[in-house]
Image (cartoon, rainbow, N blue to C red; front, side):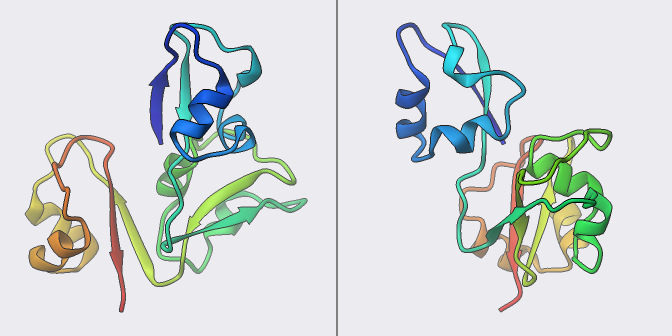
Length: 148
C-alpha cells in the first residue's frame, strides 16, 4: 500500500489513471470520500495486482482470521496488504487482495537484512533477489516469493 499526496488541481480520476486503477480500487482502501479530495490530502493507493495476487470479495460472516486459515500468511500481513488494522471491521462485498497459494509475502521491518529475509521466507538470498530485483530493504516493503 502506498500513500499519495494530492497535488494542486488533481482529481481522483487523474490519480486513478496515473496508477492504472479505477476510482473504486482507490475508494475501497480509503476511509474518506475520494471524490472530494483536495490538495495536500493523503490517500492510500492499493498495490497493483500481479499474477501473484487474487481479489477476494468478503462474504457475510467472514473475518480476517477465517480468510487466512490454511494460507501461508498471518493476520498482520493480510491486514497490512489491504491497508487495514487488525481491529478493523471487514464487511460483505469489500474486496481484499490475497496472495495466491503458491506465493509467500513478507513485509519488511526496520532493520531487516537479507539474512532475515532468507530466514523468514525460507528461500536463498539468490532466489529472493531473482524474484525481487529492485530490493532496497526499506521499512514496509513487500517481498514476494513464488513456489515454482
